[in-house]
Length: 226
Image (cartoon, rainbow, N blue to C red; front, side, top):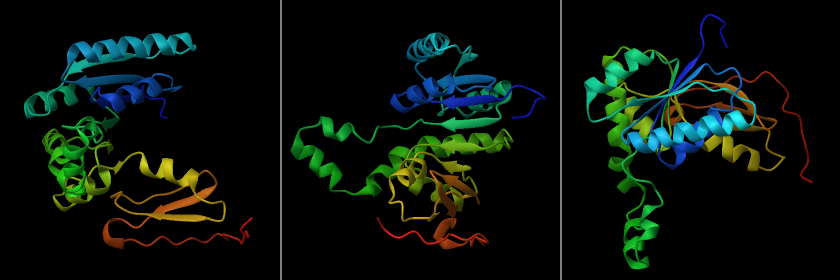
């Protein structure tokens, strides 16, 4: 991290996932400031206070603040971003959690699941699209990471010239579970090029529809199956 100024993360959404991410960020050494943005002020302030206390109990001293944030009000979003001046924006906001249909009676839940992944597109797309439109108007140039259904939402936004930097969750969860015989993972739908190492495996990307190629000069070697 640069020494010129503390790094600021703007974390949007204080639902189940956003709350967990806040707890983890509050314990991250060297992070300057966490600005929590949400629609439910009472819940967000409770989560901010809990994250501070939990982090302090483990020897950290996070700077956590809250800003009211309604993605349906573009001017509010623009002004909040301009005031916070974040180095990174992490968006978890969506209109519905994926697991909610399971709270319905089995027959009704089965009807929703039978519709396939397409039924989730407007549910997860709407708020992320509004965020990216507001960030474009705010001339925000930093990285944006999104969590709602990024494997589908981010490629769609890419067609509109509004692609986030990447989604989050899939690779970091999947790669460590792969067999030790796997040396290289090629991923898609990230909308930005990268080469990195996760759990001892090289990971790169092919963009949308395999448009990019990665040249690998190293020796992957040969490791027989156990």
